[in-house]
Image (cartoon, rainbow, N blue to C red):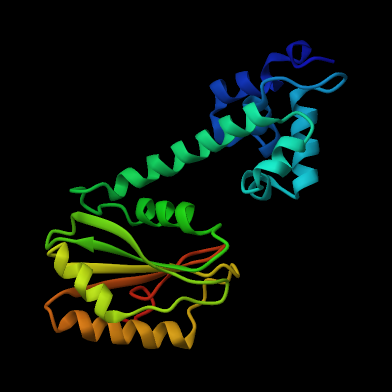
Amino acid sequence: MAITDWPKAERPREKLLERGPQALSDAELLAIFLRTGVTGKTAVDVARELLVRFGGLRPLLTADADALCAAPGLGPAKYAQLVAALEMGRRHLGEALARGAALESTADTKGYLQARLRDLPHEVFCCLFLDNRHRVLAFEELFRGTLNGTAVYPREVVKRALVHNAAAVILVHNHPSGVSEPSRADETLTARLKEALTLVDVRLLDHLVVGDGEMVSFSERGLI
């Protein structure tokens, strides 16, 4: 039976318009994106099979081009649309970190950082440079490492803070393992960076660790 033959309240598009996107399952949301099914299968059927094939929505959205293009119901055109949609979502969240914007929402800031760093296969260390009113001056990736770690040089962090004339800094790095719990090395590094930044009158506001689950904040844990 085609989706157009379903009761109106059960059709994904109509359901979204009437009840909002939060009311839809992963398969229903994906079906709206797919728009059409394949011979003998509705878009919802195809969406359910894709979720099973990739092991869920997130593995599907982060799969590489070859894997996605080879999946039934997808292909190069759908892959391009999917990547574009994901990038629009990241940029939407990233507007909270636009130059000159004040960091008014911790949730928006964390959402953007998770979207940007969570699925990277390697570790990166970034800095968010702020003025004395906590307005964004710049967000930079300063160091890139491997699966297991990154070499971070306090001197370079201080140098970039001075270049931007920053009054405050928020540090952020990801754990590709998915475990956001800070290591002892993370704590030691944070202490060194705080000391180095204090020498040039720059405040270290926080150090955020991005993993699969909840982001860990050094500030919230009283580690800064």
